[in-house]
Length: 440
Image 1 (cartoon, rainbow, N blue to C red):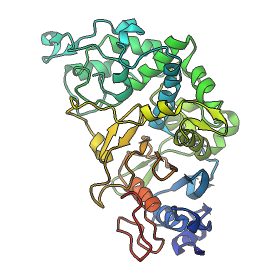
Image 2: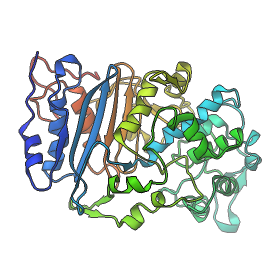
Image 3: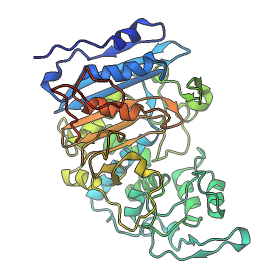
Image 4: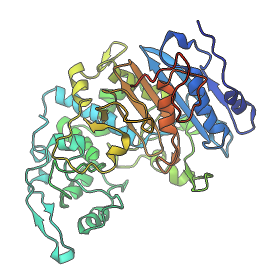
């Protein structure tokens, strides 16, 4: 039996004026693979150094809680500590919930993955592909094949993006429809999208984004109910995810985190609440499948554990095990030669609204992870993953933008998979006779 002592950095965070530490770090790590003290060292260290305002994380292993920690503040100006029940904006971690909602209809036999999208959304009948040129000289042609439902599940339909790297006429047309306009319904959004040319032939490029809003609209057409209603009926309510929603309830508003911008000098600027929380404080017509939900650690962990359990949690089945395996299997065809920024996630492919790890980390520079894991993250640097090999699920909550300016996701992953509380927490291989990199 090993007795763990919380690292000094954790105590420092609790003692200093800007810090708060709440953790299960004294748990007995000998009962599993996860070492709570090591994760405390990493997360608490970020706050103690001033590299983060606040952070929290939850890890389950073999069906039990193996780690919880909350450090720093959820609202620096209001001096509200980061807590277990803090709500954060999960941004693109909404997408997997949308995918699960749609796949419950797949299990009913309401569509096949290779059905043309236009079979159910007629506005996409006859969609064209941009073939060069500008303005009146722009050229359009028929696609090599129509976009399918499988394409919208793996971001290969050829739909446009407002990514600044796209600067041609088709990209200008895409931005002109203002796809994030909160006054659009999903029906209005998809009809505007269908009136635009595809950027590429379906199945040839991975372009992240609006496909999941089309998934949400497909849920509406197939079910005859609003997407939000179906998401709640099929996923949120059965799992007891009572803290996950688009519109914050009055009793939740004092528990939601602020949203910060991390400046190049490392300092944080708070985004005005009227701007940062505008979507979540009002019931807008748009209920996007791609973003918009707020949630708590425990709520999102219930979703992750359901997936890790093969579609079931606490006696409630959401999906069949074979459907979860389908979602968590790399579906990227060899014809997709341009995968945009996806390779930045490591040696991964893409399934249905998840990245899927297809090979071990190539080096210490790549974040730890096990082959077969599936995961996704959010614009405010949130992260979750499901690791079937090690029977592990993890959720990391943050609330700053832009994405990826710190190595926090990698360092958290490394802390979960490196079994050595005495080694340095930051990007160093494990040391000592008992140290193992469990993802290798």
